[in-house]
Length: 94
Image (tube, rainbow, N blue to C red; front, side, top):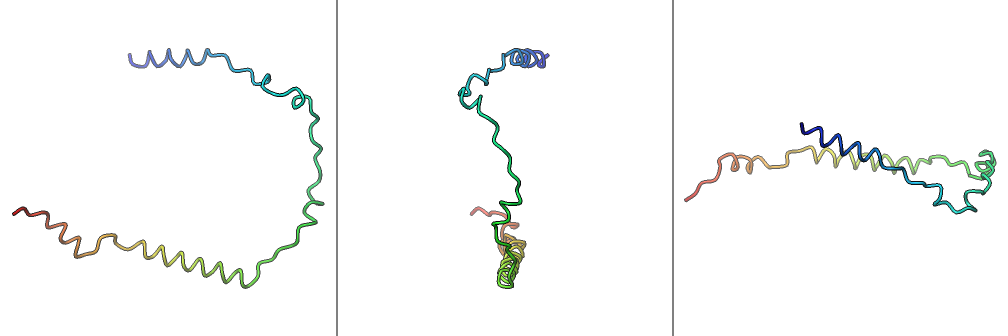
């Protein structure tokens, strides 16, 4: 019974005409020629060949070690053992 109103709302939305987006384009843009494609090899020829240096590798290894150490610290318990014991005892009202 509840599905019937939802069905009618969906059907009304489906009957909505799709907006005509072609009229939003400027005629100069619509009639412009497609840009020419150029080969990629000449563009890449001007880029210097980069290699990983030992200094870069050492820096990356140091960052990896620092992140692993941080991850190990975060894996520990959030609440210290003595605080957990106090919490398990509960609250006592005086």
